[in-house]
Image 1: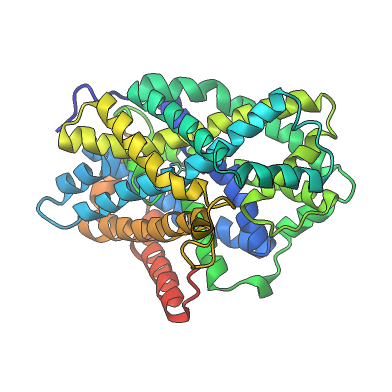
Image 2: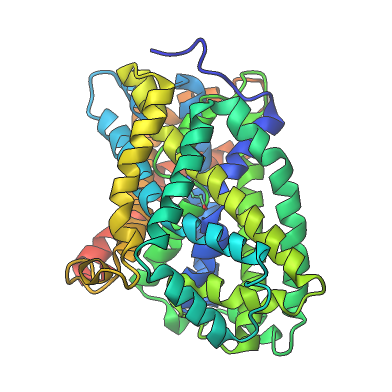
Amino acid sequence: MASAGRGEWSGKAGFILAAAGSAIGLGNIWRFPYTAGENGGGAFVLVYLAFVLLIGVPVVLSELSIGRFSKLNPVGAFKKLAPGTNWKWLGGLGVLTGFGILAFYSVVAGWTLSYLWGAITGQVGGVTTAAESEAAFVSLIGGSFMPLVLTAIFMALTIFVVRGGVSEGIERATKILMPTLLVVLLIMAIRSMTLEGGMAGVSYLFSPDFSKLNVGVILAALGQALFSLSLGMGAMITYGSYFPDRENLPQAGIIVAIFDTGIAFLAGLIIFPALFSVGVEPNAGPGLVFIVLPSIFSQLPAGGLFAIAFYALLSIAALTSTISLLEVVVAYFVDEKQWNRKKAALWIGVACFVLAIPSALSQGAVDIFSTSFGLGISFLDLQSIVWGNYSLSIGALGLCIFVGWKWGIPAALASLESSGHALQGHALWSFLVKYVCPVAVFAILVYIMITQQYF
Ligand code: TRP
């Protein structure tokens, strides 16, 4: 068991920065726009927002309450709160999911590194047409050498920070990043919306066409809400476990959720106007952001510098997310298996890189990976859906049942409020955790099974 020497955040601001660092990442800037585009725009966005409020926020608070109370990794936490039961497997699923997400996330994070390099050397800022930037993207991700090298570099960076431990490594990286990222995104959104034809993108994002809704869209929105907020696999249990006892936890959790959702919307306001302006289809898939963005930089004053700033910030935002993913797995091995932190970070990172190889080679390099052995979607997409949509939804479902019905709302609330700061609206929170979240998530999963619209 670990308590002394696990480390804790330097204060509430430290936690907010670190948790926002986990939440804000490729999920907001890469996954949200392309998922919205693949699922019809406005209606998806509305359902996503509803899930953030009705499921995301209650689950954030639930995970944080478990983390603060147990001061442990997800597996240890369930063992402590429900000793001798099978609930520990829910924590185990979370640890596995963290590993699974990291194994495709690091591939995309590797692409951002390449774009950062391209921005520094002036190639990215110089691209003007969508066709040109698509050709560049396809040739980058379809290779077999570069995607592997980039993934390896990104994994090495993640290992390096996680080796150093929570407060030093993670907090320091996010303090400067978050405010700067916000400013750069704001400027880009303004430029994008004022491009010729840009307003069509704004209305695509905000005028829902409900005929586009089906259960696949709804699951995608749920998965995206959980993914973006880093929920459903215990990352917030782990982060909450380093939260200082004296600080206001519910407030910190809600601030993180607002921040994260705001950044996703800002990313939408950058991508969709630009996309309509240059004539790319919204359903272009995982390459969307990489294809559309270079054309904005060429239309900004000092666009080359902007491109550098943007890709640098995006890479760091991705890094503060991969850190949280690796951290969950490492915390498990450190707390439960008494591994040394440095050794755990290294070997888990290396193993995760091995699992990332099929995803890295699934964008054209190796046919069986491009079709996931005949399933018809790339291995990267498959991983994103399996871990990001299904596994997180199942995790969130289990978590709500645990907090609502096993551990109990009074105990969870006592943990949330243990610093003396009340959770406003706790009756609503309790209702959402006990009834709304479990019923909604369960219904969606059952409906998917019946209709067999798995992807
Ligand atoms: N939320 C991050 C993003 O949006 C990704 C991420 C980090 C994550 N840690 C997680 C997703 C834990 C699910 C669970 O980029």
